[in-house]
Image (cartoon, rainbow over all chains, first blue to last red; front, side, top):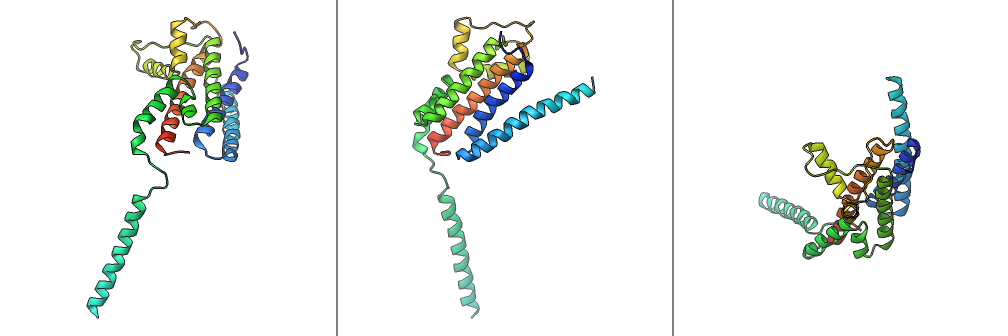
Length: 58
Length: 156
């Protein structure tokens, strides 16, 4: 079994999605890189933020 | 005087209408109607083998990127002991998850045929594994559709 860390699993998931989706959507390399970074940061920090919000209502 | 004004107005309207028609006739992308059969083949190839559609369209870097991403994602999902959904589980959401799994194409079929599935409901990574495999299938559908669009000339 790999990825015992849930956080690392989530980061790896966000990384692959951030590679594939901008490559499909954008035409230029610059736009792909920019959108990929934005998507990756949004996914990771969004998940951390949602986790803390759920912690408040435990 | 009145007639000449009316004629001028009609001519002006004709010019406007014809200009709009000419815009309609010339879309910004090249639309290949005759390529539909090939485009369907590209879609099916891309569905069965991730990135194969882009390979057929000579988009080699994208094809390699997609093949690597989807294969790694699916393999990680397998190693995380994710779940394989069946077609007849009686739950509409489970059916949608089955469609997501099916998006992996030959990877899914190979995993079923050769018994690579290691589903373990008690595993702490089970949920992540399931999410990985469904997401890789759905992404592969998008990739195959992108290959279809490239073949039809809708995208570069």
